[in-house]
Image (cartoon, rainbow, N blue to C red; front, side, top):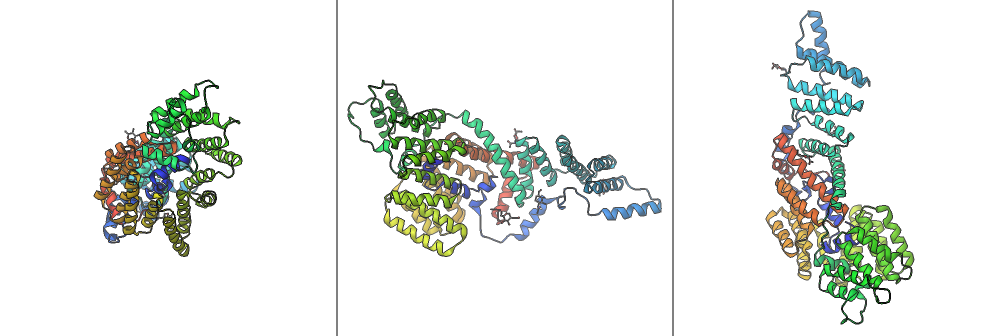
Length: 588
Ligand SMILES: *[C@@H]1O[C@H](CO)[C@@H](O)[C@H](O)[C@H]1NC(C)=O
Ligand SMILES: *[C@@H]1O[C@H](CO)[C@@H](O)[C@H](O)[C@H]1NC(C)=O
Ligand SMILES: *[C@@H]1O[C@H](CO)[C@@H](O)[C@H](O)[C@H]1NC(C)=O
Ligand SMILES: *[C@@H]1O[C@H](CO)[C@@H](O)[C@H](O)[C@H]1NC(C)=O
């Protein structure tokens, strides 16, 4: 996700990626993708309760240490036993030690607590497994307070040997793994916690989400280094350039077309979608001597642009820097280079530099609509819809004929109205959409965003007819099929219909990353985790930047962790998903 890439994605996929992320449940990157399946049925209660019990086991107590509820009882028994001279069973003796340990723990005397838990463990018969699990877990809690992470891990592991479905022990070990930066192990354990809690505890889900994102970012750093450059599809590239209000490179008139070498050759190759040739022809122009070359700056900018498009960020940056630092170059070209470099910074996670380039571009050419349009995309990406709206307003004043900007502005207004649940405002925004369509009947985004909004509001019938119109206008836009497929899932959970639409999108554009990502999410949901991983890895190869790659790696890692955990626990993941489908509302 990213500036122009973002608008590419937007444009390419028509629906902003940030919104896609919401649809696919980024806040719960756990990868179950429940959002698709959220059903309004409420037939469940009884069955869910019983299944919940099945997973719940020994985690009833809310405190970090377990087994405090019958302490008074045991105290009394101890006194009674003393009075009667009765001999305590080893288990009872162990429980007494544990209770003493718990008292120390609550008083903050962790070293002493550990000594009592030691005794409890020593005394406890091996066959009283549940008790032993508690004693180890409690000792782990005390070690945790002392930040002795290796002991925490070892005790939790022991605890889990005695009670393999002890939620609290998984959670505690997950925290210890996080503390020592063993993130994949942490991920396995926090996933186990989520599954045992059937995804009902927000705290755990947010923890899982954080760890997933961290592992995703880590993987993306090496992923970017090893990435094989790949040009996006023709359609994607076309929409990318269309997202510029005034693209100097695209619109410039060329002289001597018949003299086909250097930049002119590059332009012709570009017209024919021969992207490899674009780069080599630009290089030809750039290597000409000053006297011979008529289009050196243009060639540099174009080569930078195509390197950006295929994810060769270092090469792209060199060219863009050259154009930006060339004070003699045409202002339009320098502004264009600034905007592309800003996009590059977004894709390579150098967020602090992004807005500086926009400011410089604005200073150079304050009436250039592209500056505001591209900046709006960034704000959308950062979910700062109000700021995006201000930018879109400027674009619409400077370039009233740009339909894409106009309808995106309306869409931003819609988001704001939706977030504030302002019914009056929503109503007037819906009218704005109709205006947009009247005003720009040939702009496919008007139809696709309208479809998206109707989907949001549960008006699936009308949404479908708008998707149909959009697809008729832009049959080569693969992402539209994916979005329509997702809509069908939301509508009535029609998996077959969704799959056939998404497969169609891959037929149209085998580089449709969104299709692989969505298919992967569906397979996770169906419990086909191995297949899901293959699909996510397919998508990773097509990722346009680091952020996007990190998101995809996070999804893949979620699936991997689920495989590990379901194997370990002997749980069938589809049992969990069916619970979710049965109507347990996932946290949003
Ligand atoms: C949710 O998880 C947190 C962290 O493990 C725990 O402290 C809390 O008690 C849990 N809440 C419920 C309702 O289980
Ligand atoms: C402890 O183990 C013994 C021997 O197996 C068993 O008889 C007893 O019921 C167990 N006690 C508890 C509380 O589980
Ligand atoms: C989880 O958090 C969401 C909002 O963040 C809230 O609406 C929901 O009630 C919470 N669920 C639970 C079980 O605490
Ligand atoms: C899952 O298990 C594999 C093999 O044991 C391990 O390498 C990996 O770290 C585990 N967890 C994740 C999240 O990949």
